[in-house]
Length: 346
Image (cartoon, rainbow, N blue to C red):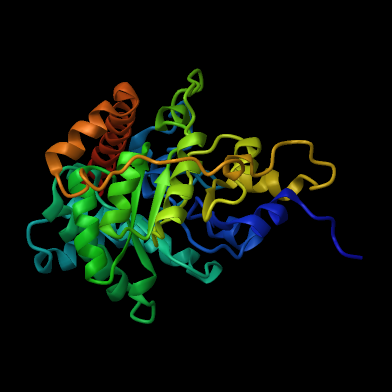
């Protein structure tokens, strides 16, 4: 007798589903998935813990026996960084070790993917085009070195959607490296990402703060922007795909059924896999339903840095820029802590 259809089955019938985790057991049990979009900060220092109860000095989440879950991976990454540091001139040893750790985490989950492994660049380079490009190419080189059999064209580099970040995306895409413009909050960013040739954008439905402050609720969720971005891309014939992220409930996930891609965290994947599709009285796919609507002409700003920056600053009366500033600050704080932890292991 066939098993009953679940909400995860329904979601997969509407969108390409990506896993927002490097936990290979989750991918094995609920996959296969298309892409893996997770952020190394979450996996190594407990970014999902809203109260941040896991002290950063522990370096890793604990396993069932109370040991450091990623102890061997971390020590081997540090050893690799020490032995290969000289060939990557200009990058700090701790920074290099962090990059190696995220590639090692990504490679563990590759057997359960059909598409890309997404790796995020150092958020400290959010406003530096050249360093972002160097960082991205170094990540691809580490993939090649750690697993020569893995196709480097299956690496997608996640880059904050600043002006500099998206100019880096433009150059990387020209060199055959796939990119995702992350921390995306408005059509000004989406139009520039398309102009730059990004493979994906990641609209944050909830601003990043919701994952750290359990008392905080985003009162301006980006469902409208997400739907508008996908309609804009379809209307303009853009190759860029919409991949919504930062979701907090299965209700939010199902509202986004019909997105080109969607990335879902382990707790929500589990709930979706356990929830019968019938009866489901919640919303399914409403974000992408309704009239197409009209769009502003962004052609005058996507080649003009000053004009684009002003338009971005004024978007939603400054809310869009405020949200990316908040996200970059959070990511930079976690990057600093990770590098401190790695330095303590040397």
